[in-house]
Image 1: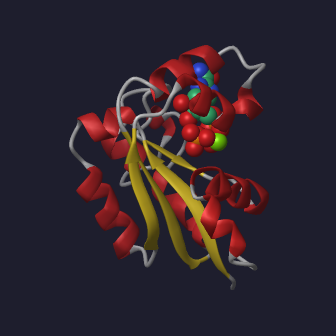
Image 2: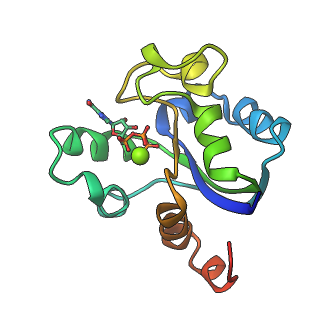
Amino acid sequence: MAVERTLSIIKPDAVAKNVIGQIYARFENAGLKIVAAKMAWLSAQEAGEFYAVHKERPFYAELVKFMTSGPVMIQVLEGENAIAKNRDLMGATDPKKAAPGTIRADFAESIDANAVHGSDGQDTAKAEVAFFFPAMAVYAGR
Ligand code: RTP
Ligand code: MG
């Protein structure tokens, strides 16, 4: 299995709940290493660009508004199968449907305020890591 990197964001609701440390512990316990991180307050332009793939969806405006409603914690996770592993830790988009013990089941309120973001594939992982950590794009292969 390949070592991968994936982009993770702890969203404003989870930062406000003061559970960054608890979420980091889940990454660490699953064998995912935090290899870059920054706390930021996203501008509407940054959030809009980051989620541009959803531009035509009915929830886009709400999503951008939510992602700019408070600070977020952005990190790159590295490890075997990191992309799928992080998605498994996160649970389903809608916390009501997320499996027990997942981050969203335990910390998220609603489909809009759902605690975490994670890249959903190899191409998006590369693009999203480069979006927030452009210098990492120079490291080939991951
Ligand atoms: P994310 O991108 O944040 O990791 O979440 P995801 O892959 O699980 O879900 P995605 O389909 O990419 O949607 C991005 C975010 O938009 C909000 N959403 N709302 N009301 C709705 O039907 C709806 N669908 C999606 C969610 O906050 C989701 O995380
Ligand atoms: Mg997504």
